[in-house]
Structures are given as C-alpha cells and as structure tokens.
Image (tube, rainbow, N blue to C red; front, top):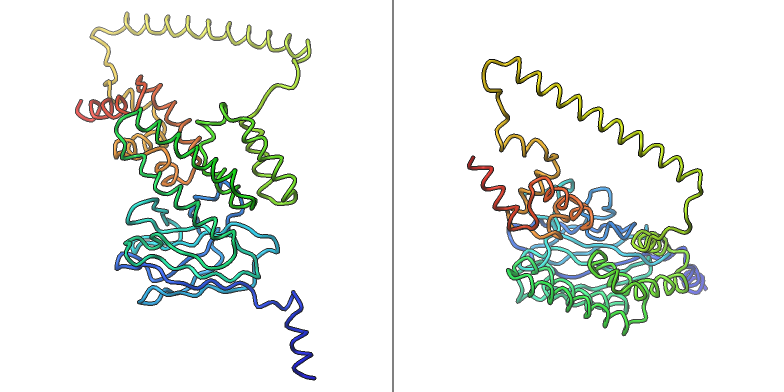
Length: 357
C-alpha cells in the first residue's frame, strides 16, 4: 500500500525530479573545470555570453565528465547553451569561440522533464568537438544543425570575395534544406536564426514570412515567436499609407527652416574663417591629418577598426562586442564613410597610413 501511494505521488507532474544532463567534454589546461548553463530568453541572446543569462554551474571532473541537474526551468521547451570558459575569463567577460579547436559551446532544447547525455568525440581537441547526444529528438536535430553551421564560421579564412559569396550561399541553401526536412519547430527556428537576414532576406522574403506563419500555428504563445515576428517586421517594413497633407506641409516647413539655418551657419563660418586669416600674421595652424580623421571616429568605431585590422569577420566582431551582426555592419558603414574607403582592405590600409603619419 505504501509503495502504491509513493508511486502515485511520484507520478504527479509537479513532483517531477526535473532535468538531468550528463556527459563528457574534452578539457585541457586552458579551460576552467566548470560547465555553465545559460538560458536563451531572446533570439538575440543566442550567441551572447553574459553572466545575467547563467542559471546553473557544475563541476567538470578530470576525465571531462559532468552532471547538470535541477527543476527550475519554465514549463515550455526553450533554448539553453552549455559552455566552458578559458582560465583567463570570468562570468563577466566570457567569450564564445566558434569553430576550430577552441569551440567551447553547444545549444540544447530543454524542459524540466528532459534527460540528456552529451559526449564529445575524444579524437577532437575542442571541448564539444563532434559531440553526440542521447535524449529527445529535438537535441539530435540540434546536433545535426551544429554540424552544418559551425564549420561555416571559418568564412574569415577565405581571401577571395567570390569564394566567400559562394560559401555563404551554400550555407544558406544547406540551412533551407534542413528547415524543409524538419518538422520540429525549435530546431527549425535555430536554423532560421543562423541565416544571414541582412544578406538573404530580400531574395527570400516568402521563405521567412512562411516560417513566421508556421511559428504562429505551432508555438503561438512562445516568446520566441513574438521575437521572430518582431524581427520579421523590422526587415519587412513598408509604409502602410501616404502621410496626411498637414504632415507633408509641416515636413516642408521644417525642411525649409533647416535649409535656411544651414545656409546662415555656412555664411557665418565662412566669415569667421576669413576674419581669422586676416587677423593672423602667420599661417594658421592646422590639425594634423591623422588627428583630424581619428577625432571623427567614435570609441566604438575605433574599437571595430582595431578588430578589422586583427582580421576579425563581422560575426567575430559581433561576438566580441556582444551585439548583432547588423549593428556591426552599421558601424562599419559609418567607419568607411569617415575614412573615405569602400571595403575592409582599404580600411586596413588607411589605418596603417594613419599610424605611420
């Protein structure tokens, strides 16, 4: 009788023991013997390493084995990231290393009832190298997706623009094949989130829009659906109607006033410059070219210029600065304008010229 009652109590959902993740990673001396579990609350957090996302930490034994367990997850399935940190890092300056021997993270899909076993291939050097997973189907699909996505992060090693374009297009097509052949909503969302919206949205609008409808039909109440639809709206923005007449009139008046003000300021600056020339008995001092150009750069633009000189790709810069790739591109466009260059090679050459002036 006691056994029956106990069995019934244990079968009640709210008395569930929770999730369990066991496994083994490849750990060398450069890695801290701890594994971190971070919650992905928003799609923009997918590649963001931040202390405010950490929900669990567990020890990694000398042989690489670990156990993560708890019962504090939301009821719905969500994305979570497991990652290791290098010895020189803390929770507040952690880095996600993508591709190669330093690749230090994976993404999984969990709820409180899941049990996973994750084992890295010991013939690889990176912590999660060619890992295998035992558990639900979603995480097997996430492993398959990782084998498509992460080798592509070697784009930065490609020297020739045509080769880079073809490689990016191949990744996009591989992701679309994965998406078309997969029914599970979250692995497909992870694949969509790894596509380059800036590069391919215009040519694949229907593809992105159809997936938005698919999310509304399958996981309508998920925060991820809301975030995706918001992102879709941003990239697909169109004016719904022409502005009213009074708004056009106001815009005309404001534009005229700005033009007049600009003309007056220009005349004043010209007069002031002429007065300075007349009152000076010697040739006016001019700001050195290097200082004049660098002064026009913001701290963020200088930081990005340094990363460009270091050979970092847009994705690597975004990961380093914890921002979206689109944000990095916006900064780079402004940087090019101020340096009066049109591409990365010219920007690096310009930076070297300024350093030696």
